[in-house]
Length: 170
Image 1 (cartoon, rainbow, N blue to C red):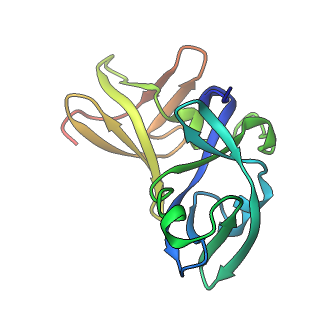
Image 2: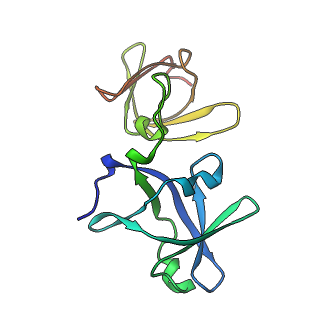
């Protein structure tokens, strides 16, 4: 039986095959890119839930990470993984201070502005260099910079809500 996503967190995804011997490029959501290797086991979404997938070898090629996985021995077999998420057990992640939060914990939260208007839910986040951006999807799509105590007023994980200082016209 597979693990539920509540016990796991997505740390990357499989990109395209690399060569003909079963190697595949990895899109890491960790910083630095190679930190994804610190989180074991890797989990792969299947019809039965999240299942462990065993790493045989990895290589860093410039800014790109490639991996060789158990039971994937050629380009065709590993191509099946293209676009699939890589997760790890939440227990593998480092403990954060009280003021820190993982992006994965923000995804799915209901976003409400200070006027009490529900803007939608956090779909995902991305980094721009200057700020991390919340992508909020509801009746409209909002791109809200994550600035603690400026645009993001309160994160309420218990009630699955995010209070923001955000005008509907932005």
